[in-house]
Image 1: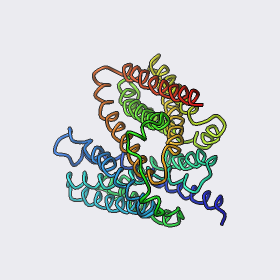
Image 2 (image 1 turned 90 degrees about the horizontal axis):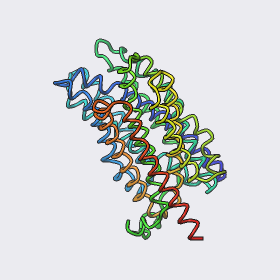
Image 3 (image 1 turned 60 degrees about the horizontal axis):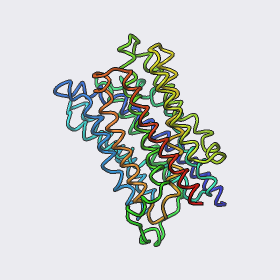
Image 4 (image 1 turned 90 degrees about the vertical axis):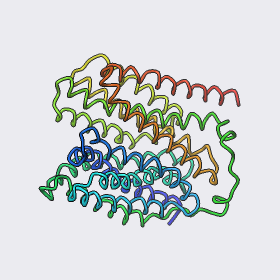
Amino acid sequence: MTDVALAKRNILLLAISQALYSCCVITVFATGSLVGLMLAPNAGLATAPITAFVLGSALTTIPASLIMQRIGRVPVFLTGAALCVVGALLSVYAIYTKDFALFCFATALQGVFQSTSGFYRFAAVEGASETMRPMAISWVLTGGVVAAVAGTLISSGTSDLLAPFTFAGSYIAVAVIALIAIAVLQLLKLPKPTAADVHGPRRPWKELLRQPKLIVAMASGTLAYGMMNFMMTAAPVAMVGCGFDKTDASWVIQWHVLAMFVPSFFTGQLIVRFGAPKIAASGMAILIVAAIVGLVGITFGNFAVALILLGLGWNFGFIGGTTMLTSCYTPSERGKVQGANDFIMSAVVAIASFSSGKLLAAAGWGFINIAIFPIALLALLLIAWQSWNLKHAT
């Protein structure tokens, strides 16, 4: 098998794995708070299982990346999927025994699957040519298209499978999907770390951060993800507050998720043609337009168009930032830089999720949209700063 053929095979397997992982995560996010409401000693702790999931992901991101640097990606990918199986089965047991603390621990284990699968996009570029890298990252994310539809259907279709233990069936489904992911991940043939990868020289952060491109790459992906999560989390609550029902909100969120991933079919080609900085900048501009649409009205159309643009802006900003990041480190620095990038991203997303609901309640939907402007403008200024540095360096 040629190097190109092997790279394409790995990308396909990683896209399938991305779809399977996303189905698991969507199911957890769709049901975790509802199970928490059933099991928690008081309603104020209903979202604790989702918080545990996010913490499980954030706390294992850097260790996972550093271990991959030493032993390779596949064993860590398999471990993440296996812990998801264990966590899903423990979730079923927790629902049966009405054990709230155990259910939170179980969702934290499933959060590890999110931290390890976040590196699928980086694994896709290993063995790919430089011109193929943007498309490799983009193609892996197309797996989210399947999950946008299938994940919702799985969580709702299996909720009463083991009635009267509501949602126990959903976590049986998560365990089965994660087992399928294990089977797919075992087919990967990724390059194993060399002695140079493991023991090669690594620049200190002070030196790494002298690269404007690295700062811009990390900021583009992180800020795009944070803004998307901040606005998306508030949108369903804002819609219900404006008189729309939950079905309307679910429809808008589903189209938003599709808008996040469908563009991945062509984002890589746009990056090859125009460059990652321009695509990332376009993403930030689209996020500003999304905020404007959300700000000028509270009709169903305003919410729908704003959330679709929000998904598209995230796609361009996130893939553009990830593509830039892959050219900012040596193979021996890969684990260090990728782990830090994804940890910072997880932390920002957690803050965005936590603050979104509180700010919506305190200041309203208009403020949620206004808050997007300074953050997106900051990202645009950073991209312009990088372009200025590049121009004057040559």
